Amino acid sequence: MNPFLAKLLVDIARKRIEHKHPNEPARKREIVPLVRNLQVELTHTIKKYIFIIIGVFSAGFGLKGFLLPNRFIDGGATGISLLLENVTHFKLEILLVVINLPFIILASRTINFRFAVRSIVAIILLSLVVHYIDYPIITEDKLLIAVFGGFFLGLGIGMSMRGGSVIDGTEVLAIYLSRKLSLTVGDVLLLINIIIFSFGAYILSIEVAMYAILTYLAASKTVDFVVDGVEEYVGVTIISEKHETIRVMIIEKLQRACTIYSGKGGFSQGKTPFNKNIIYTVMTRLEIPKLKTEIDKIDKNAFLVMGIVKDIKGGTIKRKPLKD
Image (cartoon, rainbow, N blue to C red):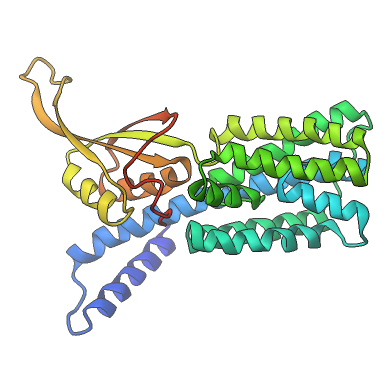
């Protein structure tokens, strides 16, 4: 680690400990684990914002290189912004922030405040990219515009989600409504986009609306490829020598349930297999980065196996908000 950064983390750790225990000096055995935790958090935060920046520039390329010059629209909050940009005198960069703002406020209550902060930062960055960067117009072929415009926009949305944020707020609305109604996230998004495309057909033309559907399909499939869905469930199996600490972290910090079952270590190099506890938990795709961060703080050598879970019933996962 960079010496300056290491000293900064040590100073921050010392101040946190002294703030918690003002009458006692900070000891080395207290500082070291806290510095390690801060280092993990910093590393993961940098990774998240790298994903967000890549996503913002990709989405900006899809908008200005394909959709915007040809008066095309897309689904979601971006589609609403493009539709309003076509029928009003407002600029797209302003509309992107204004249209997404209510969804970000909802995110701060439905998911968590940090997620909302990262999302508004990503949306503001996207509006600045749209305003200041002159992307080249790639093609005038309508089919290529729909397909590749949707691809780069979907890539941007997916990368931003990998960074723990959104640049299209309708995903947040879909997550919120899916928890209140007996609908999946995909069903809610489909209903929202049907309404948007219907307005597009009425205000612009049926042809534009049909190309918008192609754009939306290309974007949604790209998002699926990048992040496997907005709130897809992931089953996580964790094997670690520090399983008890990880169990407590999952329950207390992430407020998720988990199951402990007994297993035996098979890789024992000819020795008798040894007993160990194995943790199994189910989380949403958006919670996985936080889980990895917290596990890295406890045990960097922990063995994780993750698999997609199609649906779940019961438990606490659908009732608890995302923690960060």
